[in-house]
Image 1 (cartoon, rainbow, N blue to C red):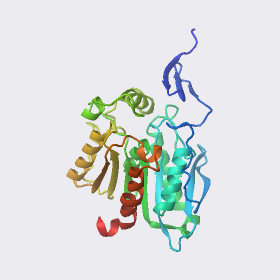
Image 2 (image 1 turned 135 degrees about the horizontal axis):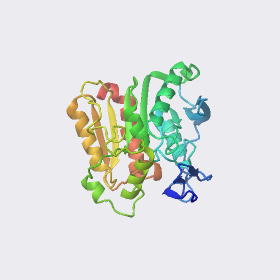
Image 3 (image 1 turned 90 degrees about the vertical axis):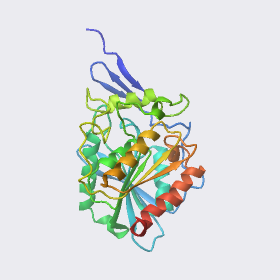
Image 4 (image 1 turned 90 degrees about the horizontal axis):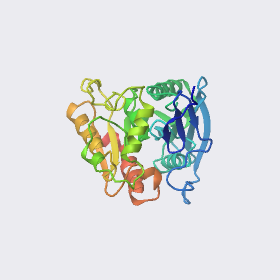
Length: 310
């Protein structure tokens, strides 16, 4: 019998072998910068600690609490990106982004890990998100700082997909350049340049690794408006803020997502589109003008002002 060979190699980080074995690089995920670190002016006024929310799978989350708040703060539950295949709350870029979210909004931020594909294909990540919210409802120690009447669910890229699918009672959803799919190519996907982080081949590869074996990109967990996806019209869902860059290959799919949500009446959705920005801009360039505007103007208004403006 011939030895197993590599069927899929994802950025040198994950290898799927012909016998179903998965090999992961021991080194942590490093995003486009060579040495991703929190920005030099990252606020020091945030305390954080790691806790386990699911002992069965040893899944944890990182809790960020601003130090100097005299009142209870809204809660932002955050799921990291990575095509459902890579990443962690401890990845430096995601840690820096959540640290800044907690300080600048301000809010209590819970950044959660979930099981990764291809070892654990979808819907495993969604089941983990549901367990996280069940765990959160049973925890009382955060009540000293957190206002559980104002809980938001958020995420970037694949994490935004998770936030879309988590059916819980929350005040609002924040989807940062959500990672949705579909068999039909959009114009922005077909025109995707080769010099960006998220390319069409990488997009296709991560879906092959993340979806149930044999499933296509119109699977309901990839395409919320696919032929077999549940209708959203009858479901009352919270307000939603969706952010995207106009250089993201997913921008046409994201625009269509927002338009369809508003057409169904199931959810009030606002699209914040940023000129000249690509996929992951708020994580890859947290000190850029667009990331600062997203955090300090758009996100802050949504989290703290939606009750009067939404």
